[in-house]
Length: 525
Image (cartoon, rainbow, N blue to C red; front, side):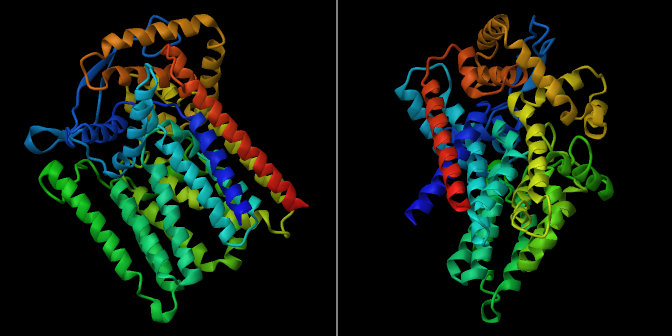
């Protein structure tokens, strides 16, 4: 038992280390800064209101760097609310989840002298931590279903590193945390089926309640999950889920209603005035499934294999198969006709990330099937393809290409549409050339020198605005550098303990790899 726990910790440590080392370490203007300011202002005694200012990104003299002419940006996407102040329209979940990291970052900054905003840096790691939890829980879920440990871990690695989940370590979007909570809700529901212990109902319901704090739209997962629980429960316990789910829903919606009232003067006002479901549903389905710029099967090719594996998975887990199908139906019915189904300037179909993660479970059934020839070859080929597609977005943030594409076209709406529907202009097609361009440039000392000089100029340009310097530097870093936080410290001239953090994370990764390989060899023997 102790060995198993150690092995699980080693696997989690491997995921966490690699994902944090992959992070960009920046929070950019708009949605991310809005959610971050709620955390920052709350902890600094300034309430939940957030400001909204305009900043000008000065043009650069280097032909390599963006922008090539002065560019105006809004610091946040806050909207008018009560008392003439501006507020975030997003759920409170992401901002609250960032509080421990913000506090830890402040302690780090107080101990060591540095030029980096360590609270901001620590908060930027939230999605890496959430995705590490996703991978560890998915692997444990596979074991709980009866599959071998390494089979389950390989499926979990595919879900993280061969899908569009991995590049979300560069962002502060709430989808990775939502994915962790949805996976937790499904896992707890399955454990209820196994044990009929009430605690699993409460855990599943609690995960759903927390999901709603991150995004109210997460309610689309509730029907499939609740129907599953009712269907698999013994007749005498069939409706026991009503109480925990009712309590969790009431508490979550009450907290959200109070938050809405504090922001906008009404518990029913969320701030999403622009929301509409006006997209023809077939257009949205094509875009989410197959479009070159947002198609989920292109950004997560292992899903094709997982779909094929459903027939095998169904033989042992019929109810769980129907649960997965029900979750996908809920997401498609909600997001396909949504007027903002693309999710905006993000890598892949952002809104589908929570259901994509849990849908990698059937891969375990395929990998252990003895009836399918070449299954491992097919799996690793698709895994390698997915890894290959994600890796340039780890090296360089995808916003560099998209920003360039829009800047070169006076009709920006048309230019963005082309990145979605034209293969040759898709981020998947353009990200490798973009990454190679910057990687080649940074082999020269002059590029580092020019980048450092531009970072110093941004200190003056952002002065006088809350987080202004950090926002301008973050925008420069994500568009114009190899996008790793531990490289960015060099451009800031920072002597902080970032190097020691990298060493610790690298050693943790090696320990996880060694333990994973050791257990794999022992199981083979």
